[in-house]
Structures are given as structure tokens and as C-alpha cells.
Length: 273
Ligand SMILES: [Zn+2]
Image (cartoon, rainbow, N blue to C red; front, side):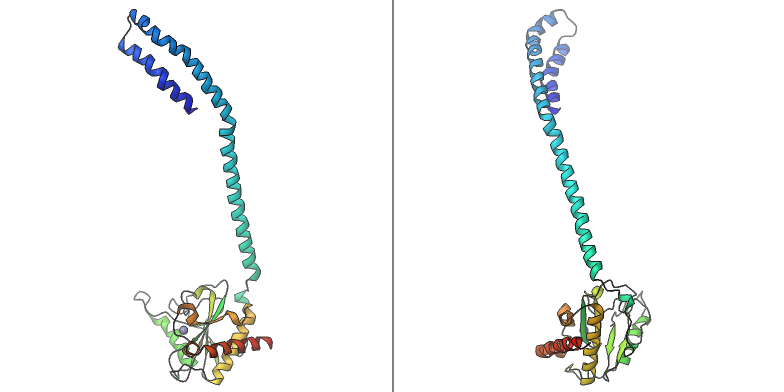
């Protein structure tokens, strides 16, 4: 189509319009114009025929091929997208635990925080991929005191900003376990992994951060129970340090062997469940 148009305006039209503009209406004009006009009339149909026949020969290829290619690309794109989406969705739903349906046993004391933007933002968690262990970093403080601290963050003025911090569980110095946030909601402890992790804070007697026997035993018990409920294993239990490099829990960062032993103990507890 474009070939034909450029041919007509480029060769035919200037000759015709130029002739009429230079010689407006004289009889001698057609005679002068004829010699130049005639060869063009003769060649024009010939060229046009050639152009038309060429364009006719090209038409099926030019028109159908791009349409077919476009259709194929569209089909591949849409089909691929739907297929991958289905696969991902299917895979995720197949392995997703119903977090809100998990019921804590009686050896976990329910001490839920007030809902607030600083420590219990009431944001649902879809899936838990890791259990993260912390130490409270404040020697000889009780689980109770740490729970009260997290809850007190609710009293900050949201317009002034403030401290954000919390944990799903706190293990105390006597082995007691407090639950501050339901498993189906996020905590503020493992940024940037708050959206898919469960947090355990553990109290400790001194600056070394080493857990006493009672706390350690409860930590192993709680972690194994969580692994069971969340369909995870000891390899999915990580340190705060593994999330963002923070030296927490201090003793397990300073003593890699103690950390490995802890994971072994969780594995053992899982077998016995
Ligand atoms: Zn930490």
C-alpha cells in the first residue's frame, strides 16, 4: 500500500500539477506538455501494474505472518503467565499451614499484647518459613518484665513516632514461656523478615548471653513444638544474626558449636514428639 502511494505522488502528481500551474489554460500548453506527459502515461500503468502485482504477491505473507506471530506471542504470554501462576499458587497453597488454627498447649502462658502499631500491628502472616531465636539483651530481666515492656510500647504517641519491638514468645529464667502475639500475626523483631518468621526472645542471667538450663530446656521444647506445627525442621531455626547480622543471640553467635548443638537438640526433641 505505501509503495503505491509514494509512486503516485512522487512521479505522477508533480508532473501533472506542475504542468497546470505553469501554463494556466493556453492551447499550446497541452502540446508542450504532451511529449513529457505521454511517456509518463505509458510508463505509469506499467510501473503501477508491477507495483500492484508485487504488492499482491507480498500481501498474504506481509499480513498473515505478523498476525500469526502476534497471536502466538500473546498465547504464549498469557498461557505461560497463567501456567506459572497456577503452579506457584498451587505449590504455595499445598504447603501452607493454617496459622490461625494452631492452638498453643497449656505450658505456654497467653499474655497477648494490646493491638498497636508499635508492637502488635495486627498484620496477618500467610506463611512461616523460619523460627528466629533472640536473647533479650537485658541481663537478669524476667519474661514478665519483657512482656510488659513490649506492651508499654502501645502507649507511645503514633504521631510522634517511637520504638517498634516485639516477639511472639518470651522464654523466662525459670523456663516459663509467655506468648505475646498469635502465630498468625507478624511481630516486630526480625526486619526485614517480619512477614514470614516467628520470634522467640530468651532471657539470660548475665552479659555473656548464655541461657540457663531451665530457659534452654524450654527453648528446645518450644522450638520443636513450633517446627512440628509449622511443618519445619531444625534447619529452619535461625538466629537473629542470620537474618541481618546483629550479634543476637550473643552466646550462639560467639559460640558456633553451641548453636549447632542447639539445633541438634531440637532435632532430637522433634524425633521424640
Ligand atoms: Zn535479636
